[in-house]
Amino acid sequence: MRTWFGALLLVFCFAPGMQAQSAPDKVKVGFLLDSLKVERWQTDVDIFQKRVHELGAEILLENAEGNDEVQFQEAKKLLDAGVGSLVVVAHDTRKAMSIVSLANDRHVPVLSYDRLIPNSDIAFYVGINSQEVGRLQAEYLTRLAPKGNYILLEGSPADINAHLIRVGQKEVLQPLIDRGDIKLAGDFWCTDWSSVEAYKQIATLLAANHNPIDAIVASNDSTATGAVQALEENRLAGKVFLSGQDADLAAVLRLLQGTQAMTIYKPVTTLATQGADAAVALARGQQPKANGTIPSGSRKIPAILGPVVVVTKHNIMQTVIHDGFQNLDTIKKSLPPEQWPAR
Image (cartoon, rainbow, N blue to C red; front, side, top):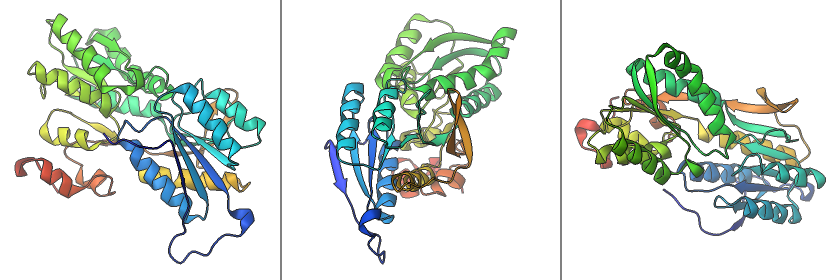
């Protein structure tokens, strides 16, 4: 896992050959981050910052480290610093409604990034259809294990995405549960998408449960990491089908090792770039281009919705390697040749 040091980064630069913007266009974008404990967020931040700089704007970044009160205070700091738009990756998506209200009082538009802040007057959303993520996870595992004992390993109960993923999972699983083909042996939430929490839940269940476990529907790769650790300690790694999300390096290695069945890849490079474009446009008083809408209370919010892709050991080269999201040389250095991805 990557970590981030420093509460505030104030950075600006211009791409090679780019002319300086006139003073009125030299806007500031505020970026409120929940945490960098999950690998993918460092990628988002790096790409987001680079694109904002290319557009001739400044970016102010704050990392709340999973603390809602800190995130609210950081929002006040960025608004006081004169940001023209505020990008929010909320820790608790419902508590973040207060951040949206604060920004609206200052007439600063809010872009909700990845985690939709519900029932709030956000200006724009950039992310994915999380319900589709859950459907794809459950559909893939039920093809491998159409019958048997399942565990649901959900994400943070404070994150609306975790709830939407669960809805998608249950859409696929519930008919099989009702028919008696699948039995839920466990159903757990993991605060802050914690791998430690996931490990504790799975380890405790395995110690108490003498029935075989056929599949674990882990909502992301961090929770899958904890599940794999518990499975390894019980000599079950590779014998229990396991899902994930984010296409983290550790998860990609597990796909090739056979201890994780699938993960969900989201084109973070594209989404972060489009998110930066939208944030700068909002800061300049412009309306970003949307490719859809997403409901938030009684409103439909203009949105950029990216695709979600199932990644298995069979299509790693065509997905995360092709897009440059993961590095082939790094993978090869981490695994013996017989486990390298097929071209």
